[in-house]
Image 1: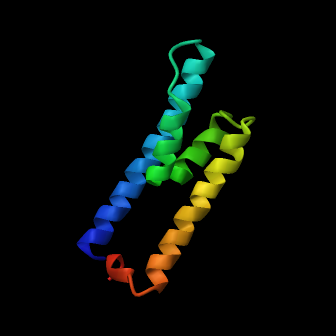
Image 2: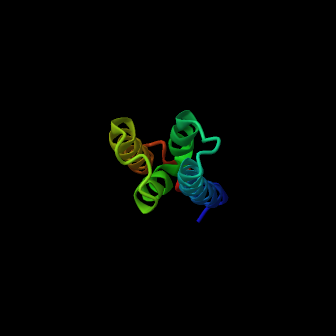
Length: 98
């Protein structure tokens, strides 16, 4: 495994943990009627590489599961991430995986 791939894997793991925790924290705050994490922040954490963590957080904490933008948006972001990985892996741009 190359250094760049190791860094990428660490980044993705960290972003997924962050996205998962953000969903949990926001659910906790919603129950306590406290200041909430903006929806844009939840989406940004997903787009930035935390799509799996955001989806797992949504359904683990049963948070935002009735909001159509999240129910559709988070899986779409995950599919885009998978498509990007496949594109880079199977194309001439696979410098990350070398």
